Amino acid sequence: MSTQADDLGPITVPATPMQEAMWWIHHRSAQKSVYNLTWPMACDGELDVAALRVAWQAVHDRHDALRTGLRQQDGTVRMLVLPQVRVDVERVVIPAPGPAEAADATGPQRLLALIAEELHERLFQLEEPPLTRLALVSVGGAHQLVLTTHHSMLDGWGIRLLVADLSQAYSAALAGQPPAWPAAAPSFAEYGRSIAAAKAKGRWQPGIEHWRAALRGVVSSTVVADRQRAARAGGRGEILQRVFSKAAQDGVAEAARQASATPFAVLLAAFHVVLARGGAGAEVAVGVAIANRLTKRDQALVGYTSNVCISRASVRDSDSLGDLVAAARDSLWTMLAYQDVPFPLVFGAIEEQDKARLRDVPPLLLSHYGPIVAGLRVGDVPLRLMPSPNRAARSDISFGLFEVDDRQAIEVEYATERYDRTTVLGLLDDIEAVLVAAARPETRPGELVVRTRTQALGTGDAADGQPGQLAGSRDEPAVPDGPGGSDGLDGSGALGGSDGLDRAF
Image (cartoon, rainbow, N blue to C red; front, side, top):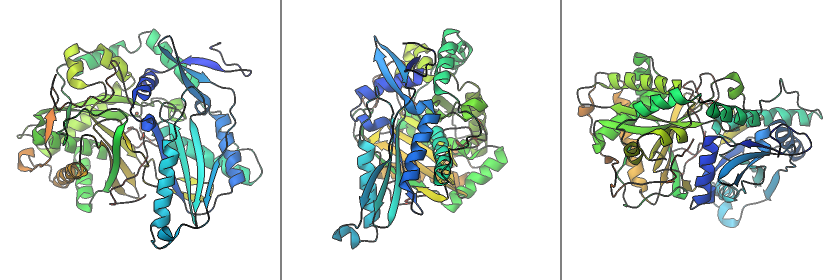
């Protein structure tokens, strides 16, 4: 097929390295929904179904990522971009909940959550676009908009942009008018071509050399598992979340102020401390999901641009928490300077012994979602993001930091094949304790008691979890002033939790 735009038919474009890695993981995963991203959004009012359908079609006409699938031929994965797709909004209506739900004030919400989970687990055929679905669900007087996409086409930043365009198109449809977009949407196909050109021209070579040096001798850190079995990409998982206490939020604010750092840098330093004090040793390393949106075009792109970088740190008892926050701040800035080099290429270029210790999917992965879920709406109907229905794990444990209404929350997705819920809750307790102590920057790590047991992964360790296990791969999401947060770090998932500590934001 032609690689040039053709209004009469589809085009093919090389998949990005991150998309290609995700394609291979998807097809080898235990649960194919592992890279489904679902945002269940409670509606504070009724939506007009006809206008919503017009708007949903309009955003697909506008953004080519929503008309794109992935196909593999002769070992190469390519994007297939269609000139047009026809889409609809699924309508699920339960006029009144059953007796059990009606007798319980939370019954309708539980039923909505179960429906969202069923919608989430419906599989996408990656070869057949669109890789998006939208359902409007009503149970009694409660309404929920459930948006599901495959991560190979959209990251969290892209979903936020999509919801904003959907809102504008919905308002226009209510008025009987076409949406008045301020400018043409950036093309995801063109983004794919630019990535292929950068690879062909060797543009990333200086960055690859940086990462080869920066990751020499690296050892991934993780939490000691309750069950010594390897976590599989797409194995069973759970999501829970916690809103940080006021004391922890005050600690974050004070540490960030004194170090001229972002809240995410403080959280990253807290992770470094817990890992080091828990037994992983003074040298620790975790994955950090990066938005990788370097230009105004990328920041406006509805698509999947995110990347993974590795954060290394040295934590010694002689350090102060203030020193460690400053080191995390500097590490993030250096990371952002080389964020555009796809992690699959980085992993493929490092020494074999470093690959064995690092893992192609970092066992611990951190993301900064920032205010990505704040102010969601469709037209004049406010939306609140509800708990994620995901029940599959992409790594040992993944963490995300959210900021909503001057509050900070942490979301955790963990592999239940390896970890008990009590272990993850204990880890959150330890992180919160470090954040509280961060208000006193002179505090030494050796003064803190950490109950979580952690380890450094070495070649052949029996406890090593090796999700994915695809050489040269993977996984997800930096620029200030975008929906991903002031850190420029990405939101690539949905805010939710089965922990019961907080149900929605």
